Length: 318
Image 1 (cartoon, rainbow, N blue to C red):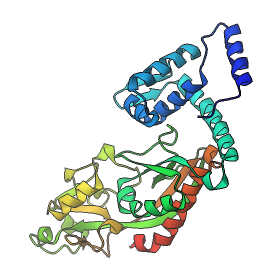
Image 2: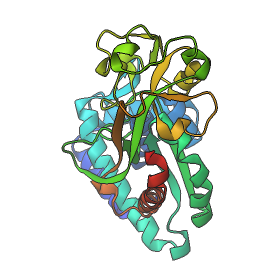
Image 3: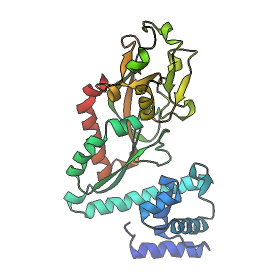
Image 4: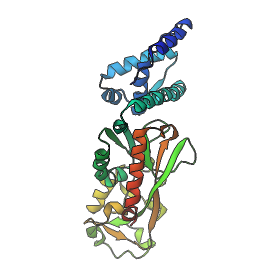
């Protein structure tokens, strides 16, 4: 992290000393930002290449300087307090200034460098993106991608990623948003499962069947269709937060599931059910905080993902 000019540090520290406040170290903000992004001491320490006790000590020192707690420790990790959220905005502004200075001073060939955190659903993160990461890295050798895939929506508001790919398009917020592509979801099962039952010719024929789906309260997006949208009395006999776990269960004969067509088309063990009757279309959107629009590393990743998605859109729709 680039240090501010020495005279700026002196003025800043003198102002704090005159106010009787403990000294806030500029470098402590770097630890604060990483903990705000990762929400765990161990992951923040890994990113900073220090011990987790060092991160904890730096945060405690920063809280003394600020005069208030910055995090609440919860079962899901370190959550920002209201004071922490206020400091986060200021710390990000400082980070952006320093990053801009770094990029201005760097050789043009080296400007696209650093870590970009991309958060997405499991289907996109495993079924779409990985084959193209090597192409992105070849174009920008100094760029490193952290792919964040987890069984819940990834929150830009919590600074969990630099770029998020989701089907839940936010109605408002300080974000840049672009459409990536549409894709289709249909009912699928395995041939061996379907062979045990009479032919399914209508929605009514689905009622006695077993279904596979997401755990309702732990789906990766709010906009995904569920089996009870088709069969009101249905319930899933097997549920998982992982789309690939659901696919494995379906292929093994556990029942019928709503699956993205781009993940199962061409794979043995899957047969469409009521393919002409039941079909859902959803859209992948890409978002990033508006304050990152001038970041060379984020912009390079953003444009690459958008161009790649547009080139592959026809393949992914059916």
